[in-house]
Image (cartoon, rainbow, N blue to C red):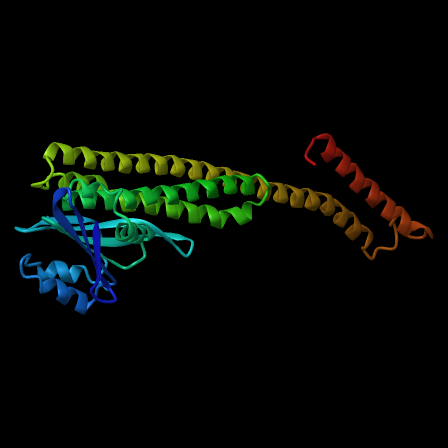
Length: 323
């Protein structure tokens, strides 16, 4: 059973134990860590948490990349996971302190998968693997599996938007599709950039030693996570290729539309040019030798000639299939 304790507004403690299995796991879940939360961790003398690592876990500091460091009594781990915020997929950082019987998570409360998993453990931990294998490495594995699986929700959202984008492009709304295509490309690239180093970090986690679970069994679980990250990379690679193809198609349709407009304007200019030339000739102030000048219907004759010339050119363009 789990024993929940709220230490402060930002610090929650969960102790998971099983009467049938010796040992228990303590999970300290810290949201929006500041000076008070970091001071609380420094007071846990038994682990002697490094001050630089604690400072790196502050909510005001964001790591540029994932990392893992080993100390005498614990592992320090920084991982980033994609989250959807304001139509954009951005990285959300989670910092971990992993020791025997203890897991500390520090984050900014913007990861639904982490919050949901903690609430699940708090309400009902009967389905947790860590109940039968009370190891912080197993609890970390279960949390990471939830966080990685959340990536599939974002991938599914991108897939739905890609299908919608395809309909938009082929419904002749190319201008509307340009901005959405660029937004989708950015989100897909962001997912790939965020999970790029997960595989290497997970391999280093597999080097963790546990007194509860064998290395072979532990590696079995983490190899499954590595396979999940590979699948996410493959899915996003497919999505990237699809959106690149849609972008190329959209640009081709835009170019075709622009070329069609330019062709229409060019044909219009070609028709108007000789008519303007004819009108300028009959507009010259020369009395002698100018045809139709003394004819009372001269204006209509000239106008008819211009109309016949314009109609002849239009028929010529139609016959050439330029119109």
